Length: 61
Image 1 (tube, helix red, strand yellow):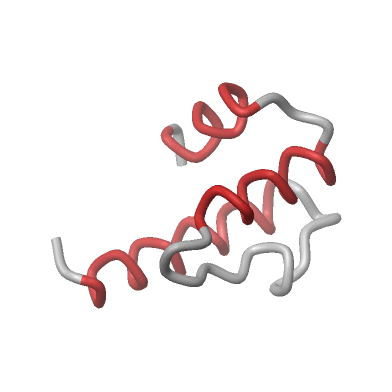
Image 2 (cartoon, rainbow, N blue to C red):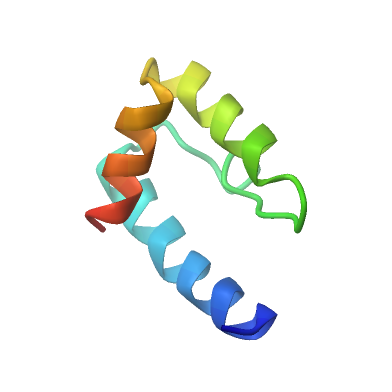
């Protein structure tokens, strides 16, 4: 999977996450290559979810 495919998939997932959790903003969901763990950490804090819960939520989108 190339970078364009990842970004395209992330854009779709980002939209679904914003629908599910209205509190999330574009800044919360900004995906930068190499900073995935940092983004997940911020989402965990904002949503009060564990790392496992976040991965489960994203995998079910």
